[in-house]
Length: 423
Image (cartoon, rainbow, N blue to C red; front, side, top):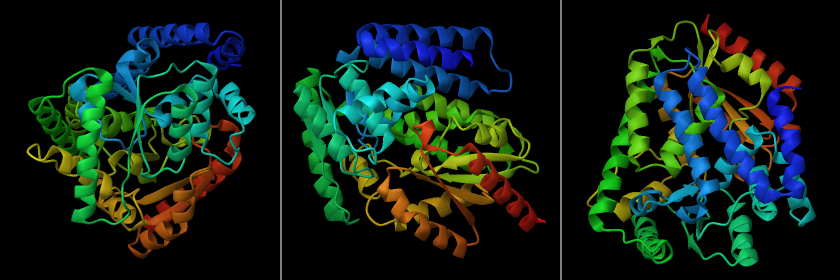
């Protein structure tokens, strides 16, 4: 049993008996981990990804220690108005990934079962609800959610609003990708802006929002340049680093920290070594960062590398600071996760071209009906364009829902097939 498993076993007992103390100990543990990372730095990790690790950890510490300055949000809620108000957003995917990485997801999953949540529900949302119900995840002053991408949002956020009396704001995103849809969502985002002001007690000036949009646009530009540079250059990293990038293009988009990371990332990749003989993969949907076979294959590997994941690069459009609400609305309406999978397929093909991907892996996360239902079609359409695609079944947040042996066998065979095709 390694130190993380020992910590998880100890914390599980604390969560059941003293959830408030468990939260405090979790904060101490995260701060201690930051100290260890500073003292025993891995020289293989580039500066940008070290910065990203600290930024993601800082965000979780902030949420757990100062919940009054945070907001619960679903992953695809535009973050720029929250950044303008100085509010830290956090999503079920982010919080639950940290809980799983800390080896303490089991009592949260058990709690949601006791509360009557079905086991077929997305495990990210089940862990998140369990963390909230036990009191380990503190109540935020308000929450904002949308129907975009995940049907779990329509259970999780209304449940929290009803049970704890938390005020909430809902953004309805139509499936139709039209100018009318963009305007409909933009009008809602204007109302959301007022909602944030009311419950954060902070004024969001037009100039402040404009600056956040400009910062977000520069961040996304740098990220697109990074993707293109991945075609010929390589920098090492872990699956956790890839997962952390969702903070940059979603929850923290528009912040100076996200922009700083994008600059560092672009600088690092341009100075990186040639990709060489590594097989370059595009990843679709969530990533089981705790999977040992995947770590062996992809982390600091001379054999294969995950170039990008669609949940990170989704809707990396240019933004117009003179039309902030329309820009944010367009990002939601034209997201690859909205409506039929055609946009998702297009995004995948674009990213494959940017990065020179040799193949694609679709992780069909248990509990996500959207991805499970679209996986076969995405695989077929990418195949028609010459991009070989593997569908993996598993759970991105609950390690008990995965088979390491099957994952290793299928990934090994897929990589060998891609290499043979190249030869």
